[in-house]
Length: 449
Image (cartoon, rainbow, N blue to C red; front, side):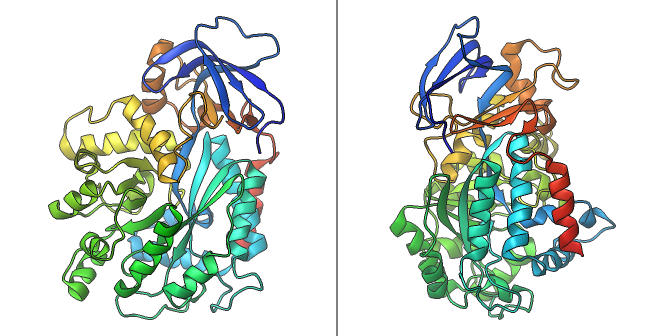
């Protein structure tokens, strides 16, 4: 993935964690890391790659289900709930094979690169063939996702997901059989065969407290703890799940996870929408992260989570595009603030810089890459450039570039994406997937055939 020789990028404007600087030169070493950051460089050095616009660290999509991209448009017809949406999702999942999943994920990850995303946390639970029989390679589906990320030029943390039951005390339904390994021990045996590589980390996930029996939660948590890898979990996305958990265990989902050693600084709760005061204190007190997915949460009518209170309690915030109603991390950052404004009727809960940190450094940290997400020496040379001259972004002075990026720009304004010092998107064109719209259209049509 990295460049093979030392390269210099000249950034017309760059966001350096707290402020926008004009004329910044980034020297990238052959190992794909930033060797030096030089400010006050008024003109491009000889031979430098010139990036016009505002360059920020690469965006981290901390929560993705790649195959949900095939639902876009279809599930927006008519009305319904999360549970009716899930029926559509099952139909798409049933048609996936390792080959079709590779093709779809390659196109989806290429769309992410076009949106400035350099790292994705793939919450992966479609493990086996329909009916639950393992493939000849039990990790064929996970390997397809890893290879798809490489083909699209981005990094991936494969969050291999334990999904063992349909609900509290219920066996998997016929759709869910291909998600299940039967037991957490069998899940651990299978996922242990997956190996990290240069662009890919292997993490773990608990689908939800309804999908992993309470007595098996600790097995998944211990697997992640022993390896020092990220552990993610869907948490309190729906009130129905909270009610069922209370009925089964007399505990909230957060309390149940705490009882079984799941919470902690390497753990991220996804959504964290319907929480009690005790839940918030538990998550913050253990520095368990929170991944908000506002565009999915509003698309599914899930509700608005207590992101401000969670962060104040000590829970780091990250962002994800989840079901890919849209793939636009700038919109996710904007929506988190604007949702809070609607709920509280006050403005300014986060600065633009704080929202960008959630979309960059804190998101990468949640995916096990603390060395990404900042334009600083020693870090991964992963960054993206946003146009300052589009119809959405023209006008503000460049020093307000962070505010412009969060509150006005969109994925359509991304001009360049660089991963490991390698130009993956150049002038709005993906360098590895020549026609991303056609790739998306053809792969999605094949799944619906």
